[in-house]
Length: 212
Image (tube, rainbow, N blue to C red; front, side, top):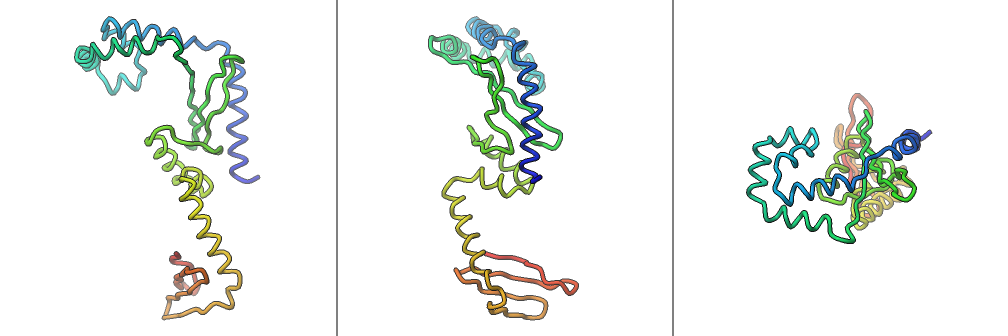
């Protein structure tokens, strides 16, 4: 089975069982939003610190949270009004990281009380922030995934790369008819379509050194 398909199945199977098992018992995220809004409105730094994740507490000490809350009382009060305003939509997300570095993002369907996959490394995805796009780029480069790399590029860049590769493939259709210029253990070949391929002989074997 191709790796992409196997990876996709590995993601889908555990996620479906996790969605069925965990979604009904999840706490209501609205309660957390209301608790944060109340703490922000009264400038309660200790309450806000108590709501931070373990990772956030590692990055911010209690004293630093108190200082920031004291400096931003007006902004916090405005934020408290904003997050509790009529029409505000609250969504629940979850991220699953697998041992090999694969990441899947899930979103809770409130009507069915079940998680749905919103993004996974083996599925088309898009970063909603520049940092997320860079994270996706790092992952696909670490996996040496050509298909993954194309997914994180803009349509224009993806089209240009695919066009260049298509032209190179067509130019190499009859390699025996190409003119090869050999100089010792190096060789250069001009390919129809404006491409050039450089080769190098190592231990008696010719390998592609570079191409454009």
